[in-house]
Amino acid sequence: MYSDVILLTAQTLINNPDIPLDQFGATQERAFGKNTAEYSVLRSIAIAWLYDSAENTREAVQKYILHEEKEEWYAAHFLFQLIFSLRNGSTKNQAAQVEHLGTFRSFTKEEHWRTGDGTLSYVVRAWMSFYDAFDYGSTIHNAVKQQGNTTLNCILAGALADAMYGCENYYVKKQYKVEDIFAICITSMMRYIRSTEKNAYSLPKTMHWAMWINTIG
Image (tube, rainbow, N blue to C red; front, side, top):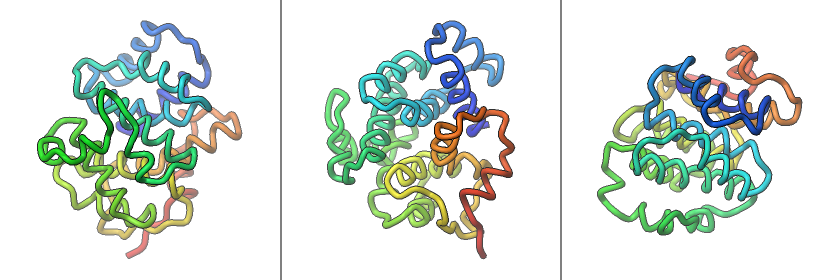
């Protein structure tokens, strides 16, 4: 389900970049039912890869994440800025200085956000998994060990790692596989559909799994 949220967001905005908000929301609701905080944050991953300017990316996040609560608003804004910054060449320390009513680094130092159960806490722990890693695979291995929803941990951390390192030809150990493993490498798929103009939502998931991640014992 997580991968479908990211894919449908990408497909919709690629095919209709100026889609009215009510139509976008109706498309998401038909596919997934009631919105959740996790879905709002996942949409920001797709949006962070769709635009070439920070201004256009921010406008799309503000319009299309469909947030309902303050925390998911913070989480989505920090996540898109981190991904956009990293994929445009920032170091980890530079990226951590992105701001949304305060620097992201300041949030990572607060115990409340490091140990909480909300979406911003998930983004903070994803950053910790990524910051302490040296490549894509080690990021995923770190994320699996974090508290909470393992799949969500890996998707968020993987999105950060992929923005800096890419995820092609990295190995994730078999014991670290998660239920929606396809979604972990979704940002490489985003690069693919941008370059080929293919319909993201119709591409078979097994194809992406085979192309972007290898599993070993």
